[in-house]
Amino acid sequence: MIDNSKSIAYFKDTSSVNSFVNQLQNDNLLNDKFTIKSYYFDDDLSIRDSLKFLGNNTNISEAITKVNMLYDNEIAPIVILSDGNQTVGNDYSFTNSKQPVYPVIFGDTTRHIDLKINQINVNKYSYLNNKFPVEVLLNYEGNESVTSKFKIFNKSNNVVFSKQLRFSATENSKSFTANLTSLQEGVQYYRTSLQKVEREKNIKNNVKNFSIEVINEQTKILLLSSVLHPDIGAFKKAIESNKQRKVDVFLIDNFKKEINDYQLVILFEVNKKFKNIIDAVKSTKSNYLLVSGVNTDWNFINQNELGFRKNFINQTESYNADYNSAFQTYYQKDIGFSQFPPLQDQFGEIKILKEHQTLLNQNINGVATQQPLLITSEENNQKTSVLFGQGIWKWRANSFLSTNSFQDFDSFIGNLIQYLSSNKKRNRLDIQAEKLFAANSNVVFNAFYTDKNYKFDNRASLEILITSIESKETFALPFSLDNNNYKTSIQNLPSGSYTYKVTALGQNINRYGSFKITDFEIEAQFTRANTEKLLQLANKTKGKRYHKNEFENLKQELLGNSSYYTIQNVKLKEKNLIDWKWILFLIVALFSAEWFIRKYYGKV
Figure 1 (cartoon, rainbow, N blue to C red):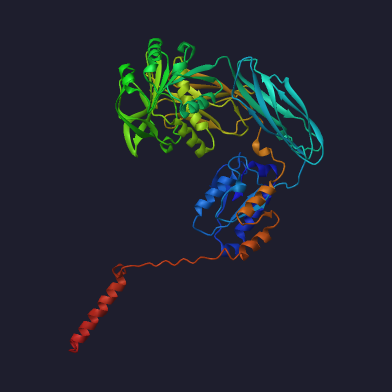
Figure 2 (cartoon, rainbow, N blue to C red; figure 1 turned 30 degrees about the horizontal axis):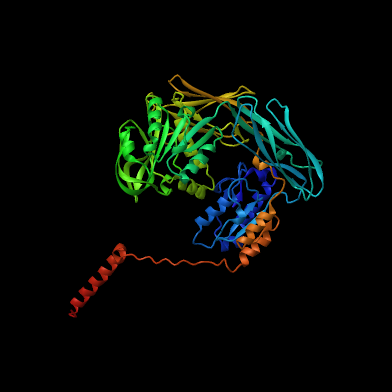
């Protein structure tokens, strides 16, 4: 397995890697004992074709896992040629590997004095004239005591924050928070810089950029419930993960305010106590999300003619979710809904009495049904949604266990809330894209396009025109259809600021935006090979670590290790005699000759 990332090229060790690979491939003794298969990896594993050392990320953990899957039932020691610097994925030093791993270290192993901006943490959004925190994490490698100055610059290159810092062998990390003020609406770009110290070799990791979107309003959401339930906390945390949104939670008995103060009302476990709220929602055409469950009064809901009803019995049923790929109200990917725990509601048949879209259907004990679990509807400028089941807090927990993050679940709830809480006229063309990208990263744009009836239109021809603000150079790219979504991407854009225009060809529909490519390259941030992690990996998998000039030592280990023995496979092939025609004819001829001879001499 050969590291094909840019960090090998930055260490100027590409020729050493190629030379080592050739030695492995061409050694007669190794080839006599082993069948040698070569792979290269950066952010993913590939069959070796040509080494170009252009990978923008390194995922050693994923590469080891995939090779183990490929050779699950075989004796296959793994030799990894790498500098040990990983940029994405799980910590590879803890990776479980059935096969012994032999890391071979490339790159500079010498420790150099180095200051590094390790991480900048900042929220995506802030409010106009508010202060927002910027969390800064700095690291230092070296034995001497040094001083440096950390600065944050705004887009006008003015210093908005500065801090003098002192590092030493014992004080080798610093973390602090800078509070900045958002003075201008829109996307704001900032640059952080850590002053270079004497004899510092790598200064590319002394600079980092970040952006924040400054908004002038906040979405207020009201959650009313008749009971205390863990779902309430799950909704609140998921919704408020976007700092543009704030959720006020009340038990229905304690609510004394007006629903007009809110852009969206969530009605949880509705019963007769919601009478005034339901009347207000209907009269003001307020947008709402209704969540039913085991304590819901379906007689009360059916009487209020909300556009849906349920013929129910007093028996609880559990409902799993089936994702509906034909859902067209907005773009929502499948985040593994079918793997989530079941929701609970009263058993019965649901009838939807108005135009609607179904995002999730009910699945009962593994049997898919056409009964809805989550629907959306838009009628007379009122947006509504109904979730037929309680227990969604388990979905959020399950999503975290599966992905080690709440992001997928929070985005799912966020998309629903964004649709319901917006009173703006729906756009036929919506664009999703980040505002800031690292150098050489994949710049991805997602588009959602509908016809005049706001149904997803897969016949559209979408095109994006990207313009460099500095050079004025422009180029166009088409979008390709990806399920209920349009998608396009571009790599290797030069650093700088860009504007874009997305057009539906043949229609007078355009959307505009901007983004920025920074100079930051994650593979250029390393000053030396990570020998410690590679040693941990070798020890954990019962392998050994080697340096790039120790080919003979590695060779002797592989040849002399009695665990790597030759396996002889015996295959028995059976073939019917009738398939060997010439043998069959010969046998028939011999038997015939014997019969005639015996007949001639009277022996028969």
